[in-house]
Structures are given as C-alpha cells and as structure tokens.
Image 1 (cartoon, rainbow, N blue to C red):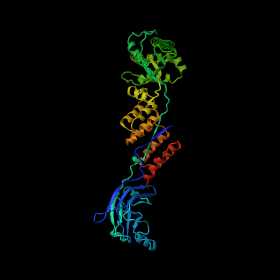
Image 2 (image 1 turned 90 degrees about the vertical axis):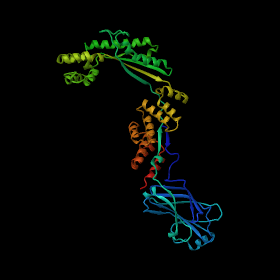
Image 3 (image 1 turned 90 degrees about the horizontal axis):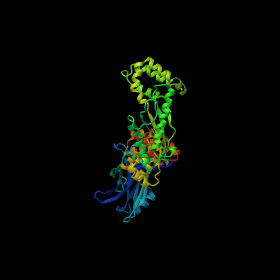
Image 4 (image 1 turned 120 degrees about the vertical axis):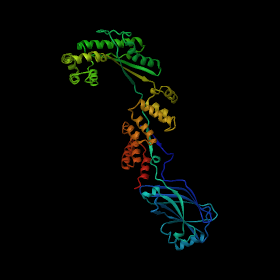
Length: 493
C-alpha cells in the first residue's frame, strides 16, 4: 500500500523558537555582542539551548574577561534555570585562568574562549539542562558580566526571546493512502411500474402510463449507449406480482411479463445478446405488502397488527412453504378482515406489481492525467478512486480545489477506506477533529488511518494512545518518526 506523508509545516518543528537576532549593548549604547540562531528544544528529559554568540564588536582587554550566561525564566518569574557560562577572555587573562582557575561565580559550569580583538569571531554555544514543564513557555535571557568582575549583582540582563509552547499541529505529519487502481463494474437499480392487460403479459408501451414508466429504463440506457466511455454488461429484469389470484398463476404471469419486458428492450437496443440476462420473477410480492403495512396507520387499516402478523408469519417460512401456503394465507386474510383486504386490494396491490431492473456496466480506464482532468471537469462520476486521486495530486495540497476533489471522491465512494482516511486528513488540516473522527469510523485500521487517529490523540494530549496507534502504523510499514518526535517534544513531563 502506497502512502504520501504530509507535514502541515514546511520543516520539522523541533524547537519552541528559532532565528532570533538580538544585539547587546553597553551603557553607552555601543554594540557588545549579537545573539543569533537561538533554538530551544524541550524534550522529555532535557531542554537543549543553542545559539550563535557573535563577538565581532566585542573588545576584551588582555588582562580582563567578559562572561555571558543564558538563563531560562518562568512565565511568572518565580523559577530560573541557569545554563553554562560563556567566558570570553583576553590573552593574559586566559593564561591566568589556566594557572589559577575561573572565578568562583562561574567555575561550576562554564565554557571558555579566547577573544581575538578586531577579528570576526562567532562562538557556537550549546547546553542541555534537566527539563522542566515550564521551560516550554519560558523567557530566554542572556546575563552579561561586562566588567569581568564576577559580581552577579552587577550583571546586565538582556531578553532574547519569549518562548511559546509547541503547536502540535505544526509538529505532526499526516499520511494519505493511495487508492488501488482497480475500477470495479458498476450497478444501477430501479423499478418501473409497467401495466399489463389483466391476465396478459404482452408488452404494450403505449398502454396506461407505460411510456412514462419505460423511460425510467430507456433514459438511462440511452445515455449509456451514447457514451463511448461506457460499456453495458447486463440488463436484468425481475418481475413481481401481487398476492391476488392463485400462486401458480401469478408465477406464470410475473415470469412471462419479465420476459416480455426483457424482449422489448432487446428489440430496441443493439446490444450483444449476452447483455440481456435471463428474466427472473417473484410470483407474489409479500415482502412489499409487509413493508406497506408497516407504514400504514390504524385509520387506514383497522386490524393493522393482525393483518401484519399474518403476512409476517408467512415470510418467516422457507420459499417452498411460502409457495405451498400463500393462497391459503391470502384466503384467511380475506375471510377474517374483508374490509382491510379490500383496502389493500385497491390501494396497495397495484404498487406491488412492478418490474425491477438492474443494469451493470463498465467505465473505461483513463490512462493519462490529461484525460482524468477532462473527465473530472465534465463527468466526475466516471472516475475511479485512483483517477480522482491522480487529479488531486495536480493541485496544491489542502487547497480548496484539492479538498473539493477529495470530497467528490467520498460522494462517489462513501465506503472506501482510502477515500475516508484522505478526507479525514483534509479535516485535520483544518483542525476539524470531530469531522475527522467521523470519517475515520469508515477508514479501517490501515497504516494511514492509524496514523490519523494518532495525530488526533497527540493533539488531545493522549500520548500513550498515540504511541500505540503509531506502533500499529509502523508495523504496517509507515514511517512515523516525525509523529514520535512530536510526542517527545510535547510530552515534556
């Protein structure tokens, strides 16, 4: 199964903040250093801070030093985490440090570099500290010892950036599922209420309302045979008679009437002989009678429950028993409830005499994207799931046009798992969790569907569930590393 991984942000967001450019000045407004490319990455156990300290403007006397210490300060200013100090020393001071050690204020945690005054010089700073939940929305400051005296009370504080908690929507990755290329045969079903002369089965197109009823079939067939993209495979007629008259007689009538309609269609359409399936028939439409009684009121049928029980009990039998007892059942209903029977005979029985039709057909495969695009603009219902997928791939991901194609695919293939998971991803791109969850009910348990469910769990903060779902997707061959990384960033306990 092919999958297409989709990130909602252009790059993997591994940090709470990136690309700052802060200038530090002394009391006279002179540039001291610049802090650039700040990245803060909170993980489950460590918070990693990196930045570039540009020393180009910094002048350090040979026998002095300057110290710079990144600090994380909580949003309410009650908590502070100090990172290691960057000590920038002059030539002589560097020798002194080697001999006597660093000042007490910084000796516990520091890194040292010698300044070459007048030269371009950048120090790539990185440190990691034990992670705290409040680090995710802390303020990053840089404490500067510009006198090189080790007196923390005299140090200046510069704010570099205010962090924000990572946005899970920018961390996650969706996975679309490419539908298979199989284009199944299609079916069309309907019913026509053809009227035949009493006790006859000859097809009379102009009798009663037959012309109107026949158009239900012929309008469809006319469109199909005129479309070069469509091949009609089979036309099958199934006739139904009402329970009136003897069962065997009805069997003969229903069968011959279905054959008569089939033959009329054969004569009017130049299709291969194999396209006309043998006619079928159900002698008496007790099923339709039961359904009609279910919808009726006691005002229409005084003994509705009793009549319904008679019909239902007959239908509980096997087909052989129904054939043997149908006439006796109708006679019992007629004798016990004559007024109700006459109402059914007049108002319900005519609608039970119908001809069901089933047309199966194939639509050609469209082999080029140009063909698919053309058909999408004119007859989108002729495209397969995969052909609609191909059309969508020509459009910007999650654009209005792309989303419209995915919705079209669902309209035509509502039960297809790949179609449901792909439209669920559209919903997730719009942060519509409720719609995505509804679609995923019909998406199966494939890798892409499990990944989408994991994304929902990540956004909701249910990381244990998300891990289980991602493990299922991974075992099916999907790369879930980005979403596991998202959990690592967000699940900062």
